[in-house]
Image (cartoon, rainbow, N blue to C red; front, side, top):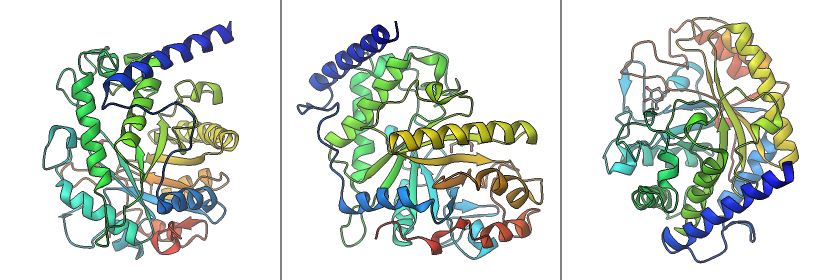
Length: 374
Ligand code: BMA
């Protein structure tokens, strides 16, 4: 029974990919399996260092860290994390939502040129820049959270009515990634993390909005297109929401080892006990999957909004993650425009002193502790 099903899955995927080869940007080389992907030497070094970094500690990450924070926006070199502990996060993530519609600013109202500069700055610190994509709904023209239509993923696949439009969006992403360069013309490696939290149903690519086969095809089409457009400076992260019960459930929509470098998940604290239980279960799953598939495990998003617990960093987060060999843990953004929507401390915030202890703990790594490109 299982074999017939996997055969069917494979055939459908191959079929969809075949159609893709004929339609999206004239792909004419084998895209599924075969040669290992072309990557720049710095991107290879990044992958090697990410694979080994958990032996030294867990890198701390913060979304949009150097773009804005509580009470400021766009100040050169500023970071709430640095203001509290003296160093930048080892990982900074950025979101490219609305790049696809030729906007000058992202969905969170940051100029793309500023994001580009901060990605390069993070590379020059020796740290990692990760990119998520809360892109708009290509079928309804709503936002990423518009789940009013459950045929959107199907519509962007080959033969779908939005396929051409969507290929154009992938080309814009490729152009952005290809032009991430230092002044000397060095292409900056990044970790690309699209189609995240797909085991929930709040984004148009979520669990109830497409089949396993459609989701996998979406991923493969994305990576194949970027590679075809010459993107050789990206690694790829698969990150679910926090509801998988075991490794095989976690892998249900996994696009395959040729497509993925980092395996992770996103989870947030509401009720502490429930959060800790789910976190531990998911950490077991991703570290086990990473080991078996030779991938890098990470806690790709986590946090406790407004951090009302003054000892959250060393009393809740660190004890929960330190026994697992994850490469990094990343908290979400410190919104300057939404009161109370922040996940890292700023000077004077209730958990700031505890964050300094978290920073000083030898198990946590910040930008000054890493050089991911050597
Ligand atoms: C969400 C919130 C939103 C934001 C989105 C993309 O979790 O922070 O305000 O627009 O992420 O960054």
